[in-house]
Length: 117
Length: 106
Image (cartoon, each protein chain N blue to C red):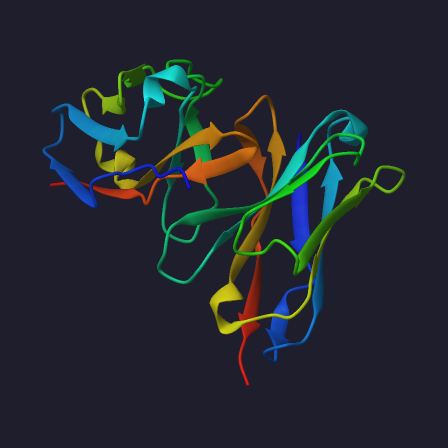
């Protein structure tokens, strides 16, 4: 079955960096676009970024553009999110999700990022 | 930027029909999908491409989309349907979520 497992979250000071990973299994990783979606504590879902199946196209929410970079390694079935210049408002659970055609049919359990001094 | 507006909360009695709306400019021209999220869990897709149900989603979940409003309808609502529901659409190459609706079954 499809599995997406995020890792790399933790507590980080404002202005610092963090790299999230999402290990995938149970499907042909290199055939699907992937997303990062976050959810601040007690808040709604917020789309963060999208990467095409081959990594050639990347799109970002305005709130993270220029600070976050999405990437993937199709040889290792892994998705990444490099987060720089972190702010308190980036505190959230970060989920990776598989795109089946504009909708997200598989989600990971998420990894918590806390930005605090 | 494009916005999707949902009511913060909807209440329904068990066995009755719940309707959750999602409004956006010319939303009917876009595909809309819906996610269910229970406390402490990841979201689950319940409707995609306006009206389609993924495998394993009960038939009591249905969707529609016309004009400026998409609607998720839950017929014969059960206690297990109590959750947060989010609509989602695309604007250019940006995915947009609604603010979410808390469905209470009481």
